Amino acid sequence: RKTILLWYKSPGTYNGYIHRLIFKRWGYTNVTNYLIKKNMKQILVFLSVCLISVSTFAQTHYSASIDFENNSQLIEIDTTQPNNLWQIGIPMKSFLDSAYSPPFAIISDTLENYQTNNFSSFQVKIIPPSGSCWGTGYMFFIHKYDFELNKDGGFIEVRYDNDTNWTNIILDSDPIYAYGNNFYTLTDTIIGNIPAFTGTSNDWIYSQFEWAWQIGIKSEFHDSLTIRFSIKTDSVETNQEGWLIDNIYLELYDCTEGIEGFNSKTNSTIVFPNPVLEKSDICFSNKFNKLTIINIFNNSGVKVKSIKTISDKIEILNKEFEKGVYIYQIIQNNELLINGKFVIIK
Image 1 (cartoon, one colour):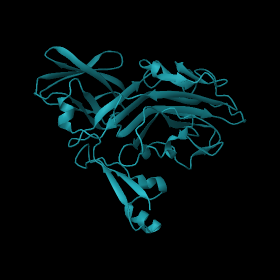
Image 2 (image 1 turned 120 degrees about the vertical axis):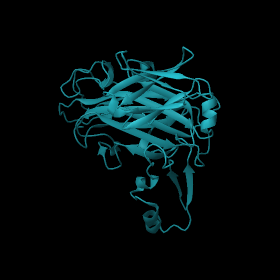
Image 3 (image 1 turned 45 degrees about the horizontal axis):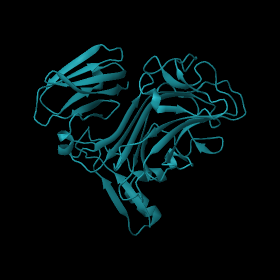
């Protein structure tokens, strides 16, 4: 008897976007085929309808946007590893030639190709507010890579609390891996049979990862989560460039609060989906329908749009912006309430 998680988002919101079934992790695209092949007599399906949507809005317990011009202090490069390749700086290689949002990114050496027989890591540690109950997790980043196919590559691992063991993020069962977009799979492996990004990307890739936490599948609450990005190479020199990563975005949600609760919060704001692939909503606190001004600035600090509304959200369209990172300000009564960030993907 197995417990299968169906992660679902209301089909009436955000262009009917529906999260894929976790059944795909085992190679089945729908419930019927899974039950037929496994001949299961009973299945317990947990519905997580508390992800961000119009009808049910998850409260954000933690969020971090790392574009390496800001919040780089959240990154810890493992200096205990011999010849660690990771550097935060200006990429100056042939293919890995610039940051997605210039000037800075994190890269496996800004100038030199990656070394043989190398293992290099950096990590981000997340410590949500005390007493919070994490419901779901969401991460995206923008990257390019150039590795020897099926030999060298880059992968992501997680660990919880004070655990010393790392688990490849797509193999993690605590929480359960729910959905990946432009992510490696179990068949994309490198030396040591490790699932990883390998080969050469054509250009910038937006990779997204989502996972489910406290939905009847966990035995305890965790105090912290650490995410580790690593490169591993074999003994053959191929003169390839490695991995370039920019705009890492992380969020943890609690599935306990509706949109009314969110809107009653002071200085709360979120963009979803983020990055903006077609269109997204900027949602913010405006319980009493005050006149609100939303100013949007590009990465150079130039104001590119200003919107007035008495609602608690506005829509932003991908086609109205150039690709890159944007900052927005929420202003009421001539006072800045809060600002935030979103990314436009082309």
